[in-house]
Picture 1 (cartoon, rainbow, N blue to C red):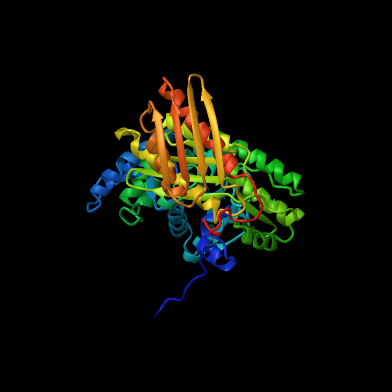
Picture 2 (cartoon, one colour):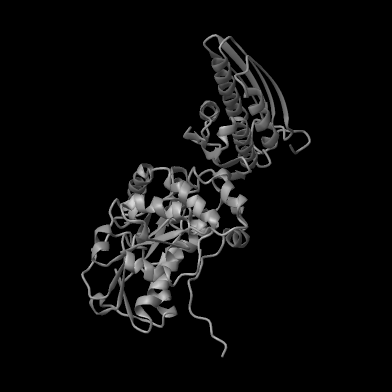
Length: 505
């Protein structure tokens, strides 16, 4: 007998689908519908999976013992109290079959994560309203999609506490393990590894044995396990996320919206027509998620959240959207870099690649150019800064080229002189569309000339820089500041024409 399809989890449209529907660049689309981190963790770089990739033809006979031990240490439990799975969703489905096949399931709160009823359907279970009468109770704590932090009830059935967002709340229910509860956690949210699909369960040893005996062997890949182990090696710092959550709450309230108090990395915004609001944001490249009675929006970082707010002001208040934010990413065997750039910015700049000196230099350039720039990533600094600096400047250049577009309406030429104590730098910029670099930096701190050359190659500008002095640091800083100030002048508004007798650059 051929089985029929069940109702299943429905994914929202991909960024490519949305881009094709509305005629926009898929790279400009921002997803506020997934409750994931704005960027991957610093540990997620090619080197983190090199050993696992070198042995990808083999099975891990120890069932990723090192990862399970790291999880056990983090939570102060024993190794035999930890089970690994392909995200916490694997456990949700498995536990529904284990404890409620053909029986009853309830959730706390009743309006909660959509995977619970899907898991019940796969187990042939009924979803009921009364937790006290259910064979299995899923407690989503904090709750998705509302962000609240519910109490864990005392019930006769098996309790499963889904703590996917617990790191954001600084609250957990691990003390309930001793009384028979099962705790679910994931690396998809606070650890920024949604694509790796790694989750885990914590329970008493007997329950873990019952769970693992029903799992497929090694449902987590070796590459994903390596990424999760690397993420655990770096302490979580959610300070910026918490601050952004409060700022976004305040800004949404000022727009006349009323987001619920959240203990997560998202906000639930009650609204009478959630589908209409979600659809109205899509042409602006902003993807949110509609639920009965409201819209859920992820809390990303400042630049991304500002794009959301600008889009909402456009839809709710009728204001014209602000200048676009250009996004680019670059992945090589040595580096992983992402950049967000707005030319007509406010000088809000963060560059963090681990190459401290050149991070600071690029910050100087962007600040003096008046850009909003956030460039983050990692590189193989163990071999030196060469690859990281080169790829950072190339990635920045790609974003600059994208932001310039056809270069219409800009003055095109810019020039600046900047002293730095005994050093003096002179920079001339032409938004020519041709990659030409003439750089003379004496003394060169190491990679100043090469950094500018890398920028020019991908931004397609002409750049002349002359800088000299006795202190290499001063010479470099003067040069980067001069390029930034020359760039600011080249980018000043000059009508709507392309400043070339050819009509194109």
